[in-house]
Image (cartoon, rainbow, N blue to C red; front, side, top):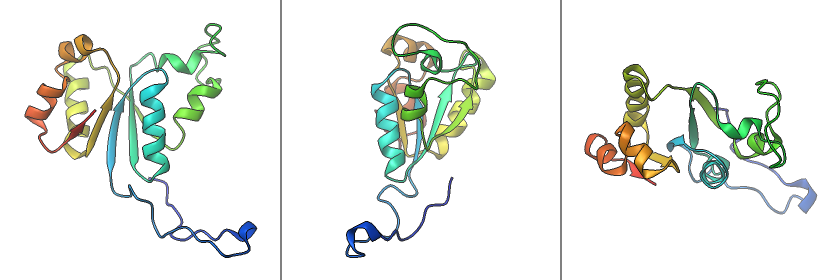
Length: 147
């Protein structure tokens, strides 16, 4: 994780205000399996508050990487990610896993075994098909907060 300053002085306020040491979610690990806007935005806020957020992407990448202003897809060049994608995924770590394979699911469960939170907005049927629905995940990782 990126080191964060323990104390931030705010000189523009005349030095009268300082941020508290650390951030509220320091030490919390979130595994995010998400697309589009809502769940990535939730992960972004958790990251902003100090959580380590690990975004899991399919081998083809998050479809939002290639969307330009909602008007269609741009080049799939990974060095030309859409501004929206960069905005809602700032401060996150990313890993590519093929969850349709046994090694991919095994790696996902390894991540979940050290996580505190599992955040996803995939369709319920898709999650059930992968065995990553809330009931299945909690049976294997009972300490997780699943949302």
